[in-house]
Amino acid sequence: SILLLCLTQQQMDQNPSTLIHDGGTAIPHDEEIVDLDFEFDIDVFDAAERGDIREVESYIQRKGTPDVKNQHGTTPLMKACIGGMEDIALSLIRRGASLDACNQWGNTALHYACINGHTSIVRLLLDRGADPDVENIYGRRPGDELQALSRYRQDDTRKLLSK
Image 1 (cartoon, one colour):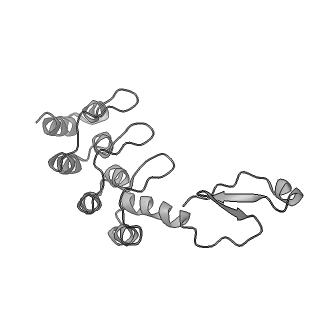
Image 2 (cartoon, rainbow, N blue to C red):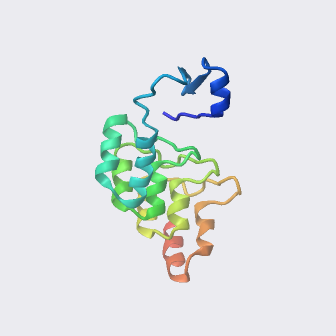
Image 3 (cartoon, rainbow, N blue to C red):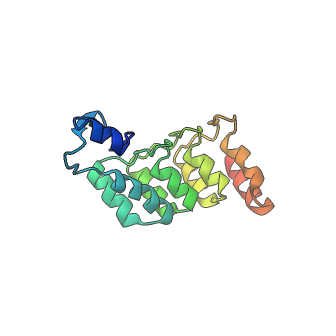
């Protein structure tokens, strides 16, 4: 859960009964806040991008879903695709991660695999059924993101997307 605190200390001092809202639950600001898993949620995104399979799998076992999103709508699968972590991507997919989930920019995991030139992950996503025609908010499909890649990697990945 995410705890958003938008009050200054002065505002809370002036009104000691001010409530902090945590995912719809009101918590008096002077009450000790425990069992918030914001840090743990943040860790799963970092773990997915850097390839820490134990951390990612532990998180999924605790939460029961691989489809958690951060404040931008980005999923651990997208982070694995950014970091080039094919084993993490495969684990997340096997556990039911949504292949075509979009973040606030409309990007999918396939967009990020293409943007970062991770051809093996592009292949994995396509083999598992990712949609290569999803447009982001800029009207760009995953294949459109290949322009920034070197010619060699661009051609290799473009062949996969044109199948």
